[in-house]
Amino acid sequence: MENEVAPTNDLAALEAEFLRKVREKGGHAGNVTLQRELGWSKDQYWIIRDRLVDSGHLELGRGKGGSVSLVPQIPSAPAQGQPAATPLQGNVVTESELYMPVAEVLRKDWARDMRFRSHVVEVTARQGRKDTGGTWTRPDIVVAALRVFPHVPGKFFDLITFELKSLDGIDITAVYEALSHRRAATQAYVWLHIPSGASEDEDTSATLERIADESRRHGVGLIVAGEPGNYESWDIQIRAARFEPDPEFLNEFIAQQLSPLARDELAQWFR
Image (cartoon, rainbow, N blue to C red; front, side, top):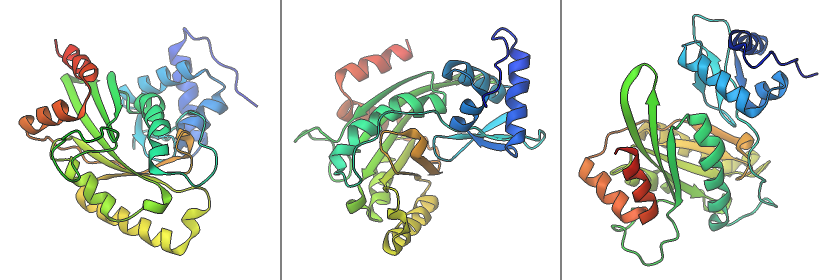
């Protein structure tokens, strides 16, 4: 049964209800589960979640759709992500079929979970014969994002790359491809499509373990998803470490990889 929603103008009551629900879940929960059990609208849920994160009561966690956890001083836990776009039909898809549904989830659910103030998402894999700097220099998807924090002055710019692999293309080299992008990116991710049941295969499981070990060693993020267009199925196994690339390389990357429209929008962020 869904809980009765407190009046939207009573923020303290809403925050207390949110924390109570997280405690019931043992101090850790997914965004989707929390929103559903609270019976709130998406807008109301994210507003209250973000207020609790900003006030230090909750911290963001990993998992399918994203999650939150109570900070050590408070007996409660994380929340999970909301429903996303319609998943692709069937289990076996090509890498190129992953681009659009993954980009759409990055643009909506993932960006909301990451609390970006502004962001641009572009599929960069389809640039034909355009010169982008050599082998392994062109990621499949790029996210440019602007973040601000309530307790830290200034604006923070992130350029995040994604190397996508379909089930039949999963290999340890995906980590090195993602790593090569970090020359000019603040974060780099490997995104793997593992349909339901495929992870139980011994060879696939062993390959995933090697990829996870190598990703962790190099600070590359790892996301494994059963349904490309459904954020609830995205398991953020490793969050990418953040690096500060040389500004010259970053500028060159933006000029080579992003569209003129995207570059114009980025310029507006800092005017």
